[in-house]
Image (tube, rainbow, N blue to C red):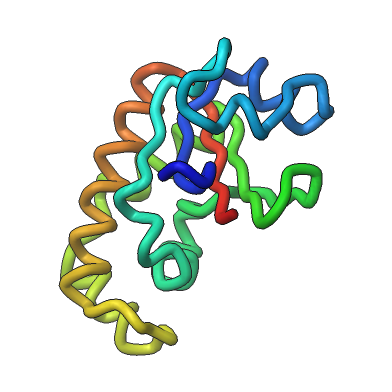
Length: 138
């Protein structure tokens, strides 16, 4: 997305510099900057609110929160990404559908299930690359 929203695979160093204010988030999270995240998975951002509820146990929207980067940011270190990827890997679709029953939702259950699939693949790639993850809604 052009507004800097999404799930971003970043190095642990990039995450640290972003949170410390040493790396400007505005240019880093926009296409074309000198330094960029490895990947921006923005396909799931349309149902981020639903994902934040349905995948809370897996910490898919970040194991920790920060107000150092506007507007809303969650993040996970490399080790936390490994843990989240492992949890998502074994999360059954039936369980996702069951969790949707008690979530406040605007998206359809099928949209959330599809978003979980895409996010699972993203976390698998991030874990393989030993990346941290930054989740941002702008």
